[in-house]
Image (cartoon, rainbow, N blue to C red; front, top):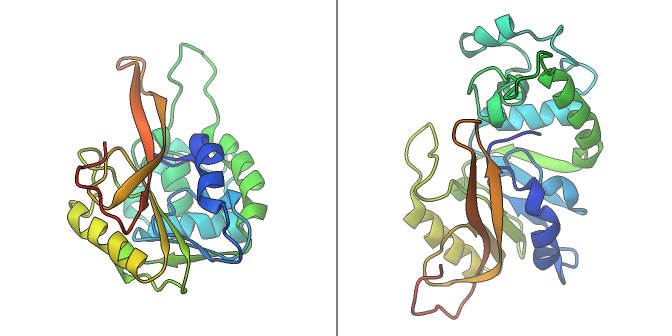
Length: 242
C-alpha cells in the first residue's frame, strides 16, 4: 500500500540482514504502515499499528479486494473532500491511497507534471492492492501501540518508527527515549530487535546504510538522506551511532 515513509525501496537490502538465521521465529512489525516490508516475509507474521485506519486499510486489501474502489469513478474527488467527516466503509484504505504521497488525508492525489491527462490514482492503488493482497493473507494485523503489543517469545522485531526531528504522529509527539528503552528491554527478553532510523543512541549498532534520494514536489526538488538499519545489542557502545 502506498504509504508515507515506505521502506519498499530498501526492503531488498535490509531483509536479508534481518532474516539471516531466522529459523521459525515470528516476524513482528509494531509500525507496520503500508505493509511494504512484511509482505515480503514468509512464515508467521504480526503487523501492528496504533493508527486504526492503517489496520483498516490493510484488512481491506487482505480481505475485501473485490469491494474496494477500483478507479476514480467509484471513488471521486468529491467523495474524498467529505471523507474526513463521514464513516465511509473503506475510509482507511482511500484515506491513504487517494492522498498525495500516501499521507493520511493529505490532499487528493494529483499530477505533479504538465500532463493534461489526470492520472487515476485510485486505479493505480487498486492494481497495487491486487498484487499485495495475496502476500498479506496469513498476516495477523493488530491495532496497538508498540509498547502494548503482545509479542511471542524469541521473535524478530523490525521497527520503523517516526524518525526523530521529522514528521510526528498527529496524535502527539512520539517519545523517542521511551521507544529506545523499550527496544533494549525487548532485547533483554530474548528478542532480536532492528530499527530503521537516521541515528540511534548507545546500545544500537548500525548494520547497514545507504544514501536514498526522495522525490518531493516540483518546487522543492529532491532530498538526499542516509537510511540506516540498527540492531539492538547487549554490548553498549560509548558513543552515539550516527
